[in-house]
Length: 115
Length: 118
Image (tube, rainbow over all chains, first blue to last red; front, side, top):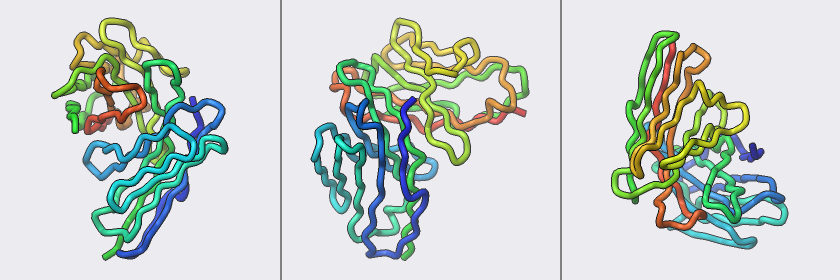
């Protein structure tokens, strides 16, 4: 079992605000870092999968960075919109060299964007 | 994106009975599927890795005789909670990865099953 931590637990922002969340994971046992967006009553939806130290990925207003040496990743949302309201999950995959692809999740950050 | 269908979305059962949850990959083949459980205010916890045509691999602390996993085809995995008790009440969700993808690609999730044991 891997210990993956996310902060903050919840966040309330106004429409137009930019925000960021943190995910920390064991750097000693790491292969890939996943970010998922989970809306109520829906399936978690993949945002990013990152493997290399220094990786930066962007999808629209959402971007993420990865530091594998110190074991953390940041997710940024620029100009938050009400439709960004969801729980954002990060997960670490430690299975380097195997085909398993197991994911160990943090508790998530619940984002609420007020209009 | 790929679709994973999970049924039922919710179920209420009596203590002592068994409940089966299905997880299907609708438009891709999945050699490996994963089962997670989430208690209130907790993270998604990996229970087991389901391998097509072979025995599942369970995480430490998960009772394999209580949580029976069958992965009989490349598109279907089932989780059976046997002799369910109130403490088994939880949210169960499956995920799968397209077998032709590399292991460091995204996983696709079902919608989850809310199990309540009374």
